[in-house]
Length: 278
Image (cartoon, rainbow, N blue to C red):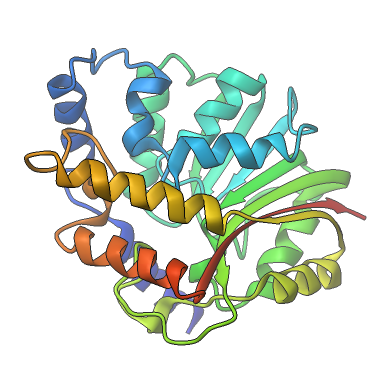
């Protein structure tokens, strides 16, 4: 069952020709595709609610994740890892189920001159190929929504982190209301979507050996972000050359509309949670 679900999740995220699409988008945007800056890559580089803006907010809540060896659990194409390397002086090890994401993460890190600071692995966050106490900190942004065995995930994070290491989680969590419509950016149907409330998430982390030290909803921020994004899109003639639509495919509009509606209706709650390993 675990393998079948992970195969389905990986297939959901894989997009054939994605690196070429990113390179073409960079070129069309006026950037040098062989040496893009993190700012030029930002529109496509961080596949989570509000992208780079939310990355900054989340990491500001965990200032201890600076200048250390960090695990990025569910790293996607590596945007957060590259930000941590360049702006926070971290050595980053990323892991993700989707093999094509790891290939792209590696390629983009080479093109941005961050290959020595970022190391990426294809694999499951439920069975990570790392020794106990390997990392001084960890981040996991928009990953747990696809994980049914949340206890195992958090136990694995606790295993590979050093004592008192900080973990920064940013996930779409379950809101107080029912009825979320699919597809959404992380799942085509509810079969591969496993949302927990912030309270449930905190409890599972504590059972796994963490102490939750901060929890903050970004729902209001996300609602405003989507309002501005939809208004900007309405004024444009088609999608921008570079954006998350390259990652979300042909039904991008439906995915983000359902997400925004879920926010408005209180069905989802994008939340940042910071914890320390006991």
